[in-house]
Every structure is written in C-alpha cells, then in structure tokens.
Amino acid sequence: MSLDEAAEYLGIKTVTLHGWIRDPKNEVPAHKIGRFWKFKRTEIDAWVQSGKSAIGE
Image (cartoon, rainbow, N blue to C red; front, side, top):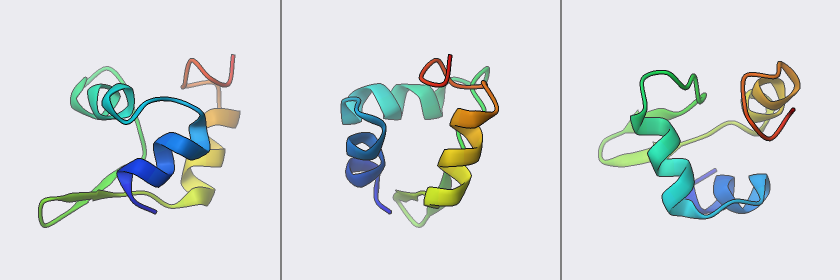
C-alpha cells in the first residue's frame, strides 16, 4: 500500500507517518521503492501488535 493508504489504515495523518519513517528510533516497516514509500499490510499489523508503535499501546 502507499503512504497515504498506510496512514489511513493506521488512522493517522500522512505527515505523521512520514515523520515516523524519518525518525531512526522508530522501526516502521516501510520500503522505499524509487521515490515512493510502500508498506505491506501484514508487516504493519505485526508492527502494531508487537508494541513498537504508539498505536498498539
């Protein structure tokens, strides 16, 4: 999914998700393909369930 789709899926703004990606302390499961960020829904779900995101807490 795209950056916009992932942000919508997580219930946050796109700018927030982009900030999380740029912060090296966060382990957001994002993949840069060319100039675009892509996400796998299963990786996002696992990340949230692991408690590594503020959303999962």
